[in-house]
Image (cartoon, rainbow, N blue to C red; front, side, top):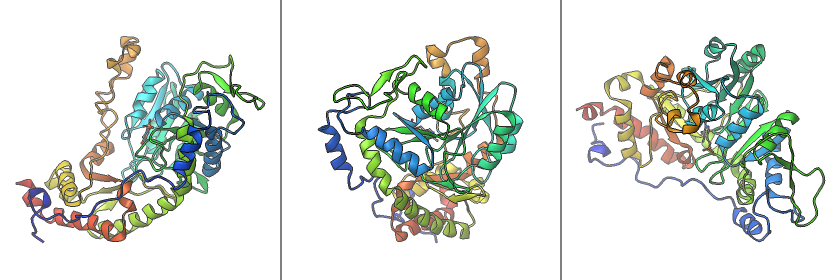
Length: 424
Ligand SMILES: *Cc1c(COP(=O)(O)O)cnc(C)c1O
């Protein structure tokens, strides 16, 4: 019980290596080789009498998620930008976002010149609290961006009802939830748009990448134009060497396209997603049981979740522990025990140093607007509490074998049994 903590020079609880993420799918190398020699490296390149990988991935991912349309994008950030703009969000509109998430959720709202409205989260899922969302709706609210955070799905039924009641767009940020299912439907299909990231750390990745899915053909068309400089796919198959993307005068866009290399890798990686999600869920369930026994509370997901996906594993520590020793210190001690980063949550979006609208001249619009996007007064109690109590670690560790998974609970037991050594 009183074995010396690793951070103080004692033996580590786990001495083995952890799985490395990402893991290349079996067919990825061949697919890359095919693109390399295809004469087409981008969807904006000439047609080579073979369907672009970008088109193939779009179809495969739409099918996978159960959506009618998929618009691949260069990043998750790009997918959020095209989703917001396609839904008509623009200058001065208010967009409701959760108090805690990755910085992209505030930077994209400010990026379309709208006003982020930070709303508190549910204490068990760490996702938007629908009651708090409804209380934050004003006549200027245009959209809600709900984030399925870490391993939880938000209460989509309640959020969908709030959006419908007030005529708002619901955008699902599913950057951390590839493959999850809620009330019989794929995640990302409950909102007008579902936005995904395929950045290095995500459950499906090509290093960088993204996708926006929707069932609405008009939104799909707008997102397609927004992400390809206002170009759209030609209505009929072009001849060899001709461009497949053609100019339209419908909508000004930006280039936010996924390359053929990324699309080819994603198409292959998609084949491994379900099996990896199952492994992660099985190991998470084992850890849930062990940590609950120790008096801690693993992250919960909303009622109606049929299939959960684990981007990160989260647990709220017994408050008696975090009252004695600061979370950051416990995280450091666990990291030393395990040889794998155990982290406090993202800082609140209204406090993240990555949010700095005044650092970019394009945002220096007016003092009135700057005052509206100032966040210094924001203080959300549940968001703040998660900062003090919730630890998380990346899903790569959930691909380890059960014995190594158990070492995580053993490390938590060891550290919490030695709090006095940490506080002195
Ligand atoms: C990763 C992530 C993003 C941004 O995706 P990028 O591909 O890095 O631009 C947005 N939202 C959430 C919740 C994320 O985890």
